[in-house]
Amino acid sequence: MKKILITSLIIFGMLFALANIFQPKYVLTNSKENNKDNVQSKLALSWYNTITTANIPFTQLQFLDKFNGWGISKTALWHTKDGGKNWTKVMDSSSTKVLGNPQKHIFNELQFINETTVWLLEGEHLLYTTDSGKSWKSKEIDNTIIRSFRFIDNKHGWAVGEVLTSLNEGENESWRGIAYRTADGGITWQEARLKIDLDYSWLLFDVYLISETEIWLVGDIVLHSTNGGKTWKQIEVESEVYGTPSKIQFANNNIGWITTNQGNKFLVTYDGGKTWMTKAVTMEGFNDLIYVSPLDAWVATNTGIYWSKDGGNIWNKDIDGRYFALFHLKSTNTLWASGDMIISRNLN
Image 1 (cartoon, rainbow, N blue to C red):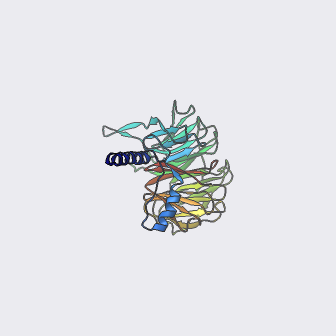
Image 2 (image 1 turned 30 degrees about the vertical axis):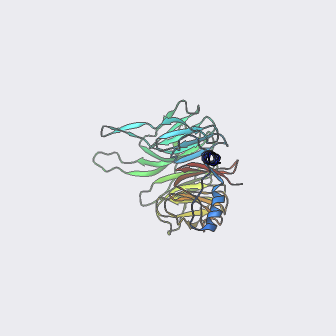
Image 3 (image 1 turned 90 degrees about the vertical axis):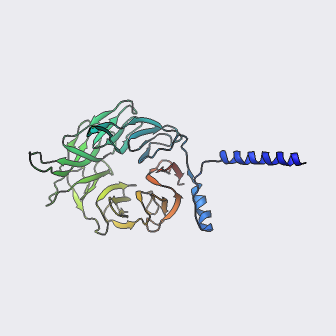
């Protein structure tokens, strides 16, 4: 009888251990309050840690469809063909010597145009491939630092940054904001005439294309064109938003948002940029923001991912962790997040 009892306990222990090993990789959150814990656990069960290879600290993710995706860490480009379960490193960033020591360039931005064409911002210049990453070409513009770029299709794109305007010996370097456009898939880039008359030097940090004719530029100033860049209107933003506008995105023709390089406040529009209102994120470590509808907004922070159901007035934690970037795949209504882990959540 004693031997039977011991054998039963051993079998039970083995079964319990196996159950823990093979349970699904859902990510649960912790909460001090039981009610919140029950609700938050249900929400967290909607997030899937789909990756089966080592977790990669992506700073940006993009998916073309539910299977094909690209991601960049600071110094590497990655690709998945199975919906994020496995990621293959496509290449490392290049290096330059600083004081005799090799120093890697940082990948700052990523955009794929289709399954074979991908553009990257590496350091201060652009790279692109037309064969899914087998070969790469560099695109540099003389005396220009590229800060951001965006394509609306495989032919038409814009890039912004600053250009060196003073090259005289003995003078301090002088830079001004500049925008370029391409109509041949990035083979050639022409300066766009912004015709902004200001009594101070200004820079540009980001660009977003609603269409081939509607363009937004942000930096020390916010500019908007509805005729393909022929004329520009300077948009005044609210003074209660701290820092310099550094990133602009749109979910559709009407819903857009501008974040800055300082503070936790941001601007959001629901009428295509005619009016902008101030919202705030109260959590620590505000890293990325995305709207999927006028009321449905998500934010990635150093303490977790938060969800707002009222357009950004009240935020509730959806999952714990440190996350840097968000991406919404509209075709499947799937939200991706990258940071300590790479996770996804179906929003249907």
